[in-house]
Image (tube, rainbow, N blue to C red):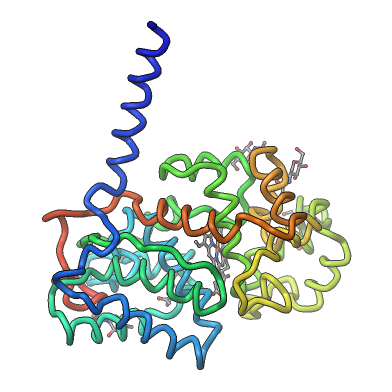
Length: 323
Ligand code: HEM
Ligand SMILES: *[C@@H]1O[C@H](CO)[C@@H](O)[C@H](O)[C@H]1NC(C)=O
Ligand SMILES: *[C@@H]1O[C@H](CO)[C@@H](O)[C@H](O)[C@H]1NC(C)=O
Ligand SMILES: *[C@@H]1O[C@H](CO)[C@@H](O)[C@H](O)[C@H]1NC(C)=O
Ligand SMILES: *[C@@H]1O[C@H](CO)[C@@H](O)[C@H](O)[C@H]1NC(C)=O
Ligand SMILES: CC(=O)N[C@H]1CO[C@H](CO)[C@@H](O)[C@@H]1O
């Protein structure tokens, strides 16, 4: 009796916490106020990906970088101003691209329904639409986010996970955003598409512990291949994260990680906790896998992080600056 009371209280508490993240969002939020928003965004993205599939990577990543810093509030899109340096101008952004595509989708939407759809929601829709355009899963995107008015460069550094993180740090960082180790291992599967600059992993190739050594958790044949692409101080070369299929969203990432060919320490680290390792192995070994379904579910969860809804924030007219 007492035990079931206690667990009922816990359940209630868990529900309240779950609702605090994402309350006010729903699928089809704009069904009355801007019924064509989803088809406008999808058309914009299909046109872009048809000619530039490599924009899929940075556009999917954009939603992640938005949500992990001040919640999914479009802060990643704001330009720096005279008084403050924005997230856009922080180190982890270095490789974010595609802002002009978000602007293009936003102007197309503004033509149809001015002042109704937030930039934060456009980023969330774009993340889904590029995934679908690269043959990945689809999911229902919750909308109803409002745009924030603040973007601070330094917050990107402190909130975004580093590619040099170990599994303990990763799991803790995700927990702070209300996400589980499962969400971590599922959403890391995004690294099935896109490219990385050398500095995110060259430490593993040349001077891992300062003794001129390599990272023992990275396959030595793969190290040899990567050395051919990245000299020690190469800042500009791009390397495919899922070599050979970096423009196709598939589950091959898990096969790579299992073979000790995850590009970043944060990818390899997924083998260092049973919570994430079991998932990696399962997705790599079973032909029928749950990855696509899991991915949609975890993206929806990520899209709820610390959102502004109701009358909080604003609906920006232009994504690069506050009204
Ligand atoms: C586990 C924590 C994560 C870390 C440490 C991490 C780190 C990185 C780094 C360092 C890059 C390479 C950037 C560059 O040098 O160009 C990258 C690329 C990428 N990341 Fe992650 N990431 C993580 C999770 C995620 C998540 C959750 C998503 C999306 C939901 C994501 C999507 C991507 C995509 C699509 C690219 C390719 C970008 C491109 O092609 O330009 N990552 N990530
Ligand atoms: C993981 O990294 C953190 C931060 O760099 C460090 O303090 C911690 O000791 C590391 N944990 C393990 C198990 O290596
Ligand atoms: C490797 O790192 C150590 C310690 O940071 C440094 O003294 C050494 O010069 C580095 N070696 C190379 C080849 O960069
Ligand atoms: C995994 O853990 C082992 C031993 O605890 C450690 O030596 C190794 O560096 C870790 N690998 C990653 C990628 O974190
Ligand atoms: C933001 O900055 C970019 C690059 O400097 C510029 O092209 C764009 O017009 C700016 N957007 C706004 C709304 O000021
Ligand atoms: C795309 C973009 O805005 N990149 C900026 C990221 O931040 C650096 C400074 O750390 C700027 O030099 C880049 O222009």
